[in-house]
Amino acid sequence: MLPYIDIFGLQLPMYGLLAIFGFILGVIVAVRMAKRYGIPTMDVLFASFYCAMGLIIGAKLLYFITMLPKFIANFDVFLANPFGVIMYVFGGFVFYGGLIGGALGVLLYCKQFHLSVTPFMNVAAPAIPLMHAFGRLGCLCAGCCYGMEYHGHFAITYPLNSMTQGMAGVPRFPTPLVEVAVNLILFVFLFIYMRKADRKPGQGLGIYLVVYSIMRFLLEFARADDIRGGILGLSTSQIISLLLLPFGIWLIVRKINSKSEAEEILSSDSVSVDNEEEN
Image (cartoon, rainbow, N blue to C red):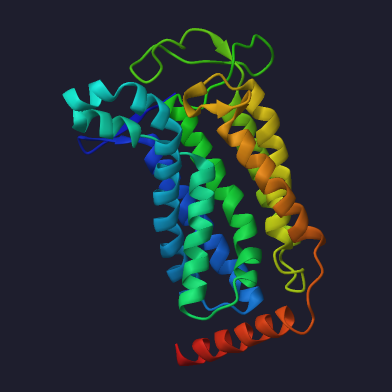
């Protein structure tokens, strides 16, 4: 566990550094994949900027929503120390909020510049789990997203420090490492599978959503950090997993409308080629 690292006298959080590094690697993978789908590199880079903004806003916003009940219940504390409370309720990230926000950012870019969003789905499919794997390594370093008490194989015991007060010194289920492993397997599979440009639009993203939603729903039972709250015995992430699962299945099994969607994709490809020639 390594919450911070000192670089030239500056104490930098490992979570943030790993998340940024993972995002950069994801963009590199997306650029490489985009060449197979006729998407110009500049479109990927600009869409990535929109994605990053949406990711940050979405992850922070969903974290705030999950903290809202505690915020309301302790409103008197907010009146006494408003700045401290604001830092607390916006002090974390929720992955699903970032995923949804990032997707909306890319959708906004495609709408603004009249591009088909479906090729971007194929390009993003392997990049998302790669980014997320590094994000979960950051969680491991920070001591968040920890699991329940567990004395079996690969158990993790967090050292006592300011980041893990109240849960250190007890062997715990390695939830961050499970997510790292699943995301890396998904990345390798999707990177190989989506290399063929004739894959059905959105299919790769559908595979990711189905696999990750099921894994995340089950893994939530092994987590012990209930800070995100829940409804009817299910955590916020489990509820979102149940909502995303049918969407992922639809992306995999849906039939393409040959007259509308296919023409949209072809027109997008022609626009992409024209942009490449101009660049």
